[in-house]
Length: 297
Image (cartoon, rainbow, N blue to C red):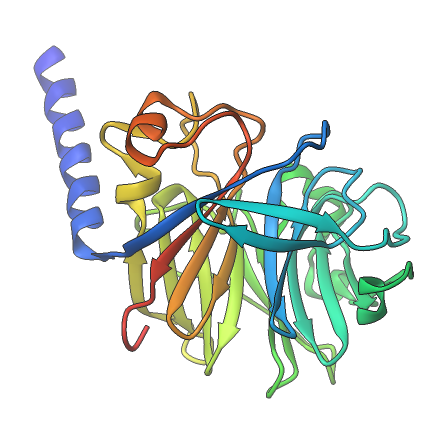
């Protein structure tokens, strides 16, 4: 029996190693760690760019602001915009922006909200989007900690994409004009979850957190067209960046013309010895990883 188990383990590890080698590893530019004097834990869960500025959200109930990001060397800092009013205590997991509105997905209550851009200068109210999920047999309010983790907007086709995290994972496409809802998945070959999404140039890009991949999807054919890996940074054989933790931590995705940014939600865990020695990280605040974006990706 021992021989059989060892053989099975070797086969599993071999398959995982082959999967990791099959996809091109991203070229790391640098790692920026949050510098903050705030006593409240900040769990980075989403990032968006607009007007030449970058904003992040956190997924704790006290995070009822957008936070503008400023980079300095290997650090980044955040400054609160005015707080916004939102029903209940949100668990904000995803953000996107289009024509004066921020779009926010909350996992705890399974709702999607819009927020007027004026929140950057003074307090305002978030408004719930009226999406008839039940007509598609979906009940996001009952998914608990396995609900919405990613949100992306295809402005040209007026389509909102939402990613259900796990158990099971889904991608939901919502036509903002008709309200029609289409649900699909991609083959679960190396990962079992989604943790964020962005839409660009006709393609949907999703974070497959536990596999350490960014996956490029054609939403029309619902097929994967490309995939890249950041496993060598976030889950290096010598150690993860935070721990002990067996699950992936990537929760925020941003695409620029030349770069790919990935934000890690470390859930208050401290950096590992590997992270200290290799990347000069310290403490227990989140990081943003910056990679060079491969041509054509």
